[in-house]
Image (cartoon, rainbow, N blue to C red):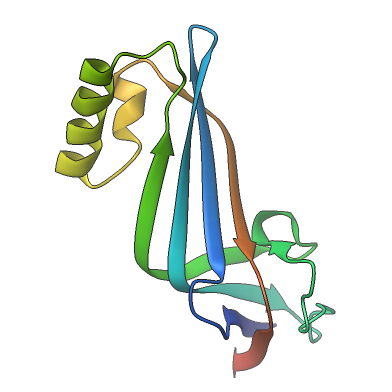
Length: 129
């Protein structure tokens, strides 16, 4: 079995989207990462379009993978209109203090969807065999 590294080659080409729900409300966190890489275990070279013109959701590729690294990200939180500015500020403070969006679970929010897209040209290299 060989471990392959799939990585972005262009800056800000990894985009992570988390969708959280609570009481019929939805909030979305969008993080744009400077770079990203994932490790794939496969006995043959993975058949992945490295030109990647349309982008790829790395969580739905046909190979088992593990996210290796996401570096230097900037997150934007999109709140539903029904949430007050005071509540937005409180949630922002919680997320910032914990440095992890999983803190939303302690506030009753449920993670409904988690996507990670690599856009633009990709690099695939064997890291061990």
